[in-house]
Image (tube, rainbow, N blue to C red; front, side, top):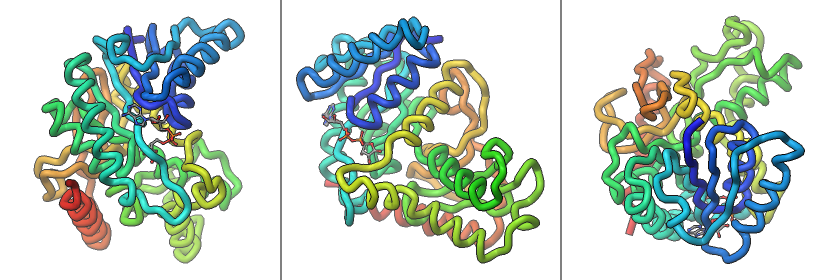
Length: 308
Ligand code: APR
């Protein structure tokens, strides 16, 4: 357990994540901060009132001021606008970049030692904005995408095979979007390569559904984007860090030559522990996967170039 975790943005993703963090007692204090008056306070109080029933002692509070977030060990950034039907994550770019800039300045001022997990979209570029504004080392700025994309992929495979989700291992790399790269060679069912259990065409269809996983939810909700699975993914990353678990999870990390790429955030296998990003693992890729990863990197760089 750490002393304080702040969640910036008390919307769907932020508030659901805050509740998850409290349920697991990952911090003594979970602070939600948002610009809307009353909403973070109301949701924080509501969550705290669930504590006697759920039996957690993490004190959840909501606020409009960064003063209460000061000295956070970890900050999760979910502030921004979410997608509506017909919008790509890139359509959110300059609105969310402005928000993330302001949020990052506040984090730097009030929690200079924090580890930041970026969730606002387009994720890989927002993580870059945060890193640039805060000047934090790459160990302390990570993006949440791969855990979510991998979870979607695993959930679809489990449905298709009618087996437990617990037995599906997979790795999805690349940017959070249409160019994500699910690694066929790393997808197994209790260690058995997926290719032995499903024909190629079926696997391709599941990969396609994973690529469009976010849009599928947006299309159904119509008024916003997914939040239960994103929040669960945030909690898993935070838990790996807080409990120093050294878990290997796909996260968006600032690359410094790994996979022949540098100067961008991209989804790669990461070791997460108490220091944040403790290692980027370089796994062997097929030539097709390498081409796809390069294409994904190119797409992220093109979005970075559109930043105003
Ligand atoms: N500071 C703090 N909070 C802010 C700011 C800001 N400058 N600007 C906006 N917010 C808050 C909004 O008031 C709102 O409560 O961010 C919250 C966003 O919540 P939702 O609209 O419910 O969006 P959500 O579904 O939670 O998605 C948030 O995460 O997954 C990504 O693409 C998604 O970028 C989006 C983000």
